[in-house]
Every structure is written in structure tokens, then in C-alpha cells.
Image (cartoon, rainbow, N blue to C red; front, side):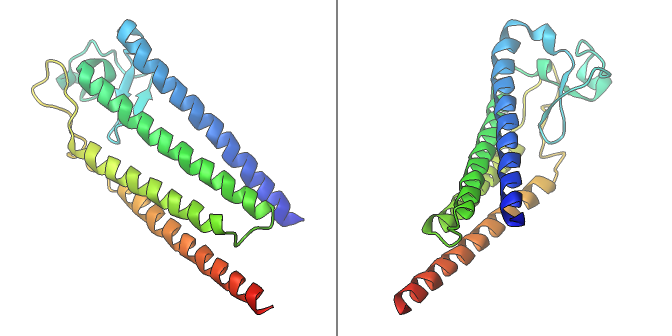
Amino acid sequence: MKTTKVLQLAEIFFKILTGLTSLALLCLIFISIHSSFSPETYEKLTINNDRNLTFNSDTPSSQNTYKEIKLVYFNKLVTSSKLFLLFEIMLTTIFFLLILRELIKFIKSIKDYNSFHRKNSKYFTTIGKYFSYLLILQILTSIIPLTIKNAEENYNSFLNFNLTPFIFYAAGILLCFTIGQVFKEGERLKIESELTI
């Protein structure tokens, strides 16, 4: 009984997370379209060291120069860098949505008492592949600089190198492939026991 409730809570949690991530993706699409028509709306939108967009009402206006503030403003990027940054964040968000979808499928199969069903190992193998793509995307985007208008230097996140995302994605890859192998072995043992009976 308790296990069923935990699985239901986990499913609800992942569905809420999927909804919030989908909403974030829609906001990114809106920003990418709206920022080309109304750039003044995004005066306070900045980019942090992890190349995430952050909006802070306390941040000075982007009318100040890059050298004065030492922050990277979204409006200060050239159009190609804006599009590249938004595409990078959208792609990461899409991969997270795909990971959440696989987790929801896995929880549903466990709820149906199919713990060692053939698809369960595939769910984790697929999640491991998505983490691999995220790691490759993280490596590529960390070495590609963003071009700032009228600045002497470009913003390169590799200079502000943060090891945390790399460790997170690498750990995700190893964990998912390991769990996938555990379920694969469970499937093999289940088939063997059914044949023995």
C-alpha cells in the first residue's frame, strides 16, 4: 500500500515537473520572438556563468557599458549569439523533458507490477543517452564564446569554467546505464525462472 502511494506521489511530482519545464520552454520561445520586437523589455535580463538567463530587478540597466558593470546582458549580445544561447537553453530543456517522459513511463510500468519488464532497461538506457547528449552539448557550448556588441572581448564561459554540470551529467550517464544493466539482468533471471517452472 505504501509503495503504491510513493509511486503515485513520484508520478505526480514528475508530471508537475514536466508541466513546469514545458512552461519554461514556452517562455524561452516567447523571449526569443519578443526580444527581437521589443528589446527594451529585456534590459534587466543577464547571463550568469553557467549561461543561464536570469532576471533581476536590482541589476543596473544594460545602458551601462560592459566594462562598468562586469555583467553580460542579453541585450548586449549580437543577434547570432542571442539565438545561439536561446537554442542552447531550449535544447537542454527539451532533453530534460524527454528524461522526465522516460521516468514517468518507468513509474507506470512499476505500478503495473512489471518491475523486470523488457522496456524498463530500455528506459534507463534511453535516459543515459539523453544525459550523454547533454554532456556533449555542455562541452560544445562551454568552448563557443558569445559575441558582445561593442566589447573588446567576447564572453566565453570556458574562462568561468564550472565543473558541476559535467560531473552531474557524467554521473547521470553512469547511473542510468548501471540501473539499465541491473534491470536487464533481472529480466534474464525472470525469463530463466519462468522457463524452469
